[in-house]
Length: 206
Image 1 (cartoon, one colour):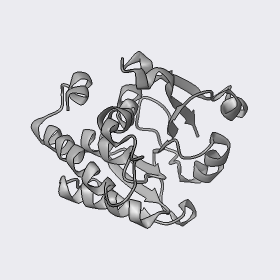
Image 2: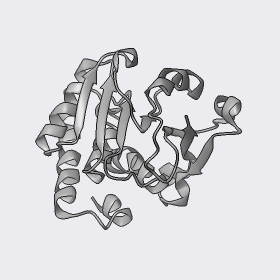
Image 3: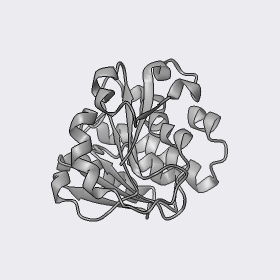
């Protein structure tokens, strides 16, 4: 918890307990179902939980905001964000049922009431959302056409509704067709750990 509290000292007792429990539950589940690389599970707090919370440094969601986490896997970034934002609703979607089962179990056991889950393809999702978030799921050129129809027209946040992705590495080719609209924020501006040197938030209003 040291890394999380270093950057988010404002967390209340409930949130601190939820993060602490999640940090215990993910390794337990990962021994049965591989939702995080076995080589990387020891870096859970920084490389996965804190990475997910990078979105908080980029934008503060207002209460009532609706967010879809596309390709959530075991609940990242959706579960850490749902802990941080108890007044925001998160709809976690994934095609792999066993990974979604992990996310559901962890959410239930830490007492999250602002998350829903859907097993299946994004084409089966119904409803509108203020933002779609994803963490290293697919190229921008593939994800943008899939999620455009989900973005609600009414804006309630400091930035217009759209797509927010957590990514790393060289993204120049991937974002070239959106370069006049896309905004890139370096997570190294907020987090000092080595892991974040190449990690970015990619935002595209839709």
